[in-house]
Length: 306
Image (spheres, rainbow, N blue to C red):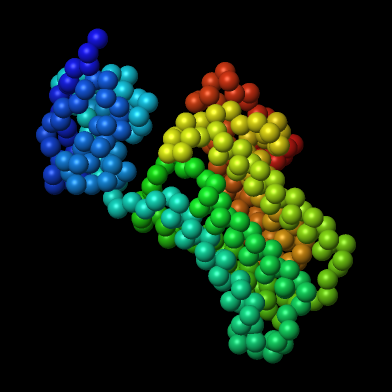
């Protein structure tokens, strides 16, 4: 049966969109992304800046190629509402900006110690050197994963959110940890405890490799440019919903044992709390989107704890 066009009534939702048409036509077998692209062309906005919902029940029209206009329940005469989400920035760019902060801040504090701290010697302690190396490697890994590994379910986010998102990394893992780690009066400036240091290095390496493995598994579940989800399997997935967060905590626990600074403990605790919230939400999404194919996990991030 040949596909036929339908005419949809278009209304703005929220602030006015200058070039938004009062109606638009599209084939019933056309995709949700086709509708987004059509309205993007007519308004002059990026498709990622628009959110389309059905006028009768407020349900979103997915911006993807797999959902057809017919499958959303839209028909000729149906009303759709279009919201301007404001200027957008690519998620990949967001991650690069977030991680570049601590990646630059730690080496700067490390090498400029004599100029930042009164009475600081030109030679940093072994623990301060290890702190700088491990944290720099951690965020360098994150940058490389952002560029070559991660596949994002959402293409963009509002530009205004970049400041809130970056604060966590630039201020907490960057300035907070760096300032109190490279100070001549910090615990990191003292003598190392070989047992703690070696255990810390082992945890750091194991955590980083485990985290990378999880990200590679997740990458393999999604096609390039796709938003689909598959059932993740492999190291850690039998224990928790998000082993990448578990391994992240293990890596930062390793850094804490090397670093011995209260500032690192504060950042690790805040990061763990935030990842715990994300892990619970991820479990809910898996159960909703994957249905019976997914086995519910008792713990979302830390076995026996959360």
